[in-house]
Amino acid sequence: MSPTLPSHDKLATPVGTTLERYIMRKQAEFPFATGELSQLLRDLALASKIMVREVSRAGLSGMGEVVEAEGQPTAPRHRLGEEAHIRFVRALTNGRECCAILSEAREEIIDTGNHDGKYVVALNPMNGSVSLDFNVSTGTIFSIYRRVSRYGGPARAEDFTQGGRAQVAAGYILYGSSVMLVYTTGHGVAGFTYEPSLGEFFLSHPRLTIPARGAVFSCNEGNWFDFPEFARTFLTTCKQRRYTARYVGSLAADFHRNLFTGGIYLYPPTGEWPSGKLRLLYECYPIAFISQQAGGLAVAGATEVLDVPPTADLHQRVPLFVGSADLVRELQAVAG
Ligand code: F6P
Image (cartoon, rainbow, N blue to C red; front, top):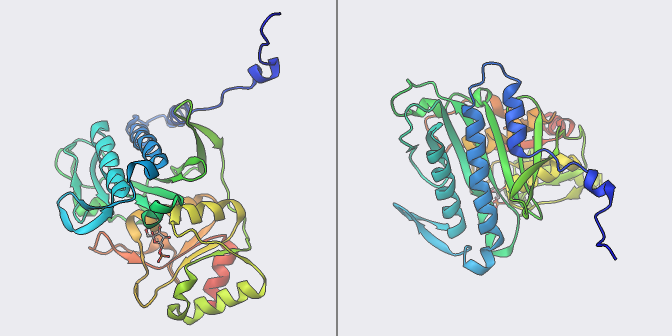
């Protein structure tokens, strides 16, 4: 008997668009694009693939351990968070398009030595790392700017403080039940799912949009008695309407879920974090850019997150309310 071949239908199914092909196709749509930004996106994808391997082995390899960060003895970090920092810095440095990096894992700007590079990258290499030991979803969040400092020399702080609307690209990688890379260059939001057996990201969500209204709220309710009055009033209404509470405690994961279901993520000021907890440059700006491109809204109070002026503190924290536009506006109305 001859061996059974896969059915014609199965063979006829196209393998799909890889991230690589998608990036090239998009680049070709811009006549003056020179490919540098595309290379940067590839570098980020490469580092994320290495991290996919490490995250999936975290339980076996002791990656949840707390370690001393290189040159930062006062800031103990999870080994996996530290490894993510090193991997992303290395990939961006080797790719040569990125002149400097601002990482959540380091106080100072990192000079990659690529002084002819036109771009700088701000990133949180591994958010939600407090939950790493427990197999909970984590993420990498990034934001890309074209530098304003002179090419040929080192980058300056002003390259990172151009404001949210100057971002040329932003995205996140979510290490969850499957791994996804979601990014925007200001022309909508595309999502790619990682196929581990092929080692490739495939386009799975060509145009992600967030439902205008949702019935999910995501916040750390343990802070209830520290929340400002308007946040408690808004959340009480959500509960009266029998909305669903969902909170992972990793911004990329919470935002990603709400992007699909509709909903709102809140991190208001609290007693411990009077200015909010999340970082403007590498958490709030990129998530706000993606949310805007997906039809959602991100505010830090009365102001849209993308319009919050950055201060000289590159690790500045702000409050964050992001998700379905109608819900975010309702929260703003309660805040007055
Ligand atoms: O990066 C900060 C962060 O870990 C976010 O990813 C997350 O949403 C939030 O802090 C969780 O904070 P908390 O543990 O206070 O709920």
